[in-house]
Image (cartoon, rainbow, N blue to C red; front, side):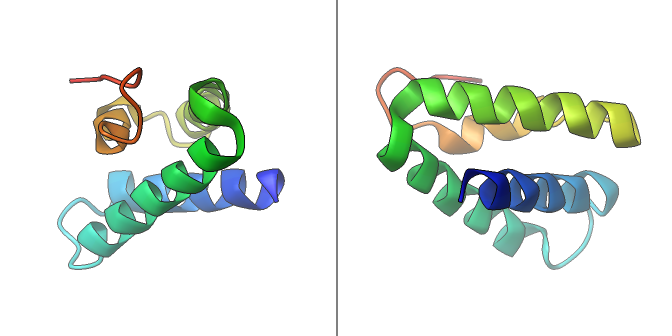
Length: 84
């Protein structure tokens, strides 16, 4: 399951970064939030950090864009996860 969620996160964020004006961006963001909830439910904040770190490195390596602005979409899933 972890591998599948990681791949899905990469696909979602890559799409949003490459197609910022698409009508699909909001649905992709919504699914990204759901994936974050699944990760948190299964492993807590540490799992969220680990997943995002791995995804961030891969996206930056593949398309040279940073997904960091999307971290704030997970704000509210945990009191510990607070990003601007």
